[in-house]
Image (cartoon, rainbow, N blue to C red; front, side, top):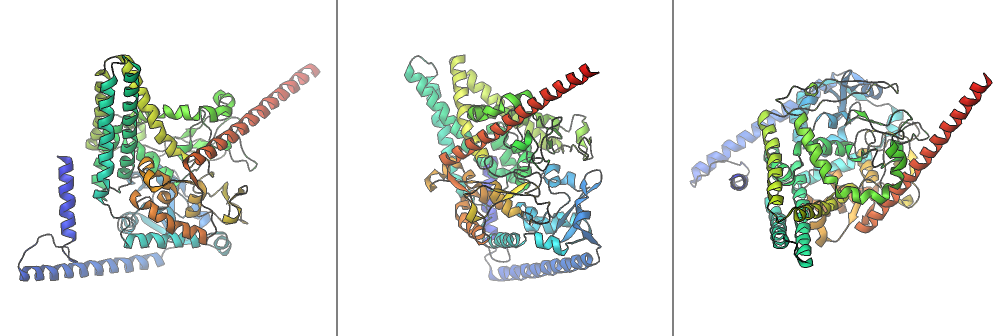
Length: 600
């Protein structure tokens, strides 16, 4: 019934769209009625254009009378307790009270707090959403004034080029949803599931080696079904299936919660932050897996600039609202040096972690339970390093939406238990579940592959501790660029995507296997573009990066995995050396203390 209504709506909407420029909703065969409708619609369009022009003029007039605000003043407004400001198109807005209403969550906004967020906002939002909804509902407090030195050290040309490309894509219909493009992906997913289910039931008696192999083959196909369904859930989370937020929300609950057991609300809370602050040590939750996995040595030990973990505290996670375990944790000291050996086995069971985090998130955001995290205000703050730390609230959905989230998760687990208990023996159930989840580990490799071996920054998108390299020096060692220094230009949002993201080079006939994740750079540059257009988009983005002498990393799947393992081995050795140095320092302090006691 749901899908029938969806198809009916889309067909009706398409019919109304194709009825002419006026877009009348009711069609009449008589010429007189059609002509009058066209005139009325033309008048309505003219009125809307006049109202929009008048609103823009009033907005510009208001902005001219705003006081000037420097970048230093803007940077000081980056906490919930002290107020949250951000700049968009040269105007500074106070978004403190609006943050709890942000559909992407508090954390996605806070990753851009206190700075110019024009590029990231244009990348993630439709222009109409920004101009007619968000900016009109927030209070403008001033005009951003940038001095000559800051202009010299900024890199705005590339931002303008990519914003112009984004406008070109919008005008040429690159963002338009196309439901027919999902016919074959859905058909393929159903074929994988049906074939896998048939093979599992054919060999669940485990009477011979052939039966065991048949059951394992069927389990692998069901695992590939979960992989392909996850691609659909990713599209729904970005609103690129139907183009309507509400419809894609319900589709995401069906595909994400009901068919994979991964809560859409939890996924959005992490994924939107990942897009707005890619490979940010403090902000990006996708790279914060200490103490089991360390993707960057600054999670374990501070670098020469002082940025990184200390002997008492690890790095602060703005997403989790706590200090991450650092070098003081025994797993970090003794296990992480060997992480390149157990990385893939860990991803084979990583799906269970996603299930646990989904359940925890649904419980945390339940509107029926009294919780201190239901507030958007600051919950706790510490200042062990001299800086205020805040733990942000988890916005609670409406009760009907939460019931859909929880109910769809219950549906997934109920069907999974019924499926496993319908097999002949517990051995068959255990083997089936193991093969399914090991196969889904391929998806987790695809998710993290494009970012782990790339560049990391302290916060935001390359503001501090980022690295820059040109196309001519792409094969040489990366040069660390401290963006806080006045002698080096700040890394722009679009440049940082190239530095922190790697594409996977594969032939077109393998697109079904990677599901669009192989075009991770293009997806990060324009997240709202449907994945069917990402291969074509690659030529346009490469041309702009070449124009600005910025290298693009693109490797085959196996070569990318080799690069990933080499990176993890290097980080593991750095952690091991840091642990040995810390141990030696402790021994020296102990010997020194003994000598002092003997002397006294």
